[in-house]
Length: 182
Image (cartoon, rainbow, N blue to C red; front, side):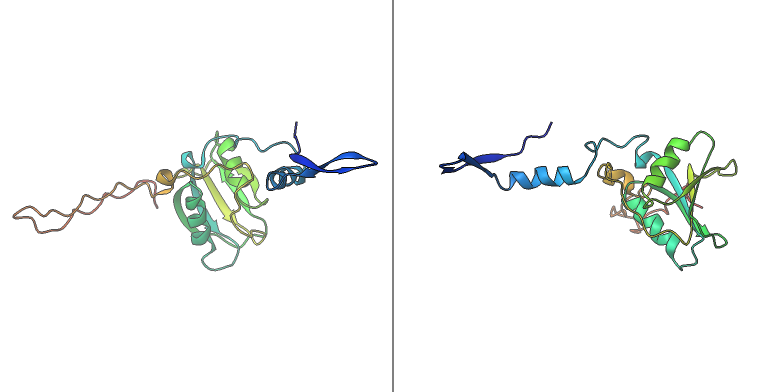
């Protein structure tokens, strides 16, 4: 139930008391009513930080996979690399067997495009997105929660700080390779 916020207004001899809209509280109620539908609920399925996504460019636009991978990472997804594919008209969301729920979460961030395709060949990610010519950009769904900034960071371990102890050369050892990156 929604209650519209009002305050007492002037008196009218024919109508009696007149209620006036209480601002700015009324704006929030009006915005909610304009959404037409139930109140947004929490996102269904796994969190983006629990989903490894690989992005392939099949759109023909140079750099689209890298840009989309970065945007998905900023939304909390774990990126598992980018690459190119032959040009496709329609965006496809390929998923490992048993990862349909993860694929649906990824699909919800693709601006309404993306055909779901089960794919047994996926091994280094949960979901592989092939961007088609219909892809416009990453758009968080209305029920998306704010990304977990710790999860949005690359999953490679941090390199230790350079040594400043006597005898140290000030160089940190090279970080270990990330097994989720191609």
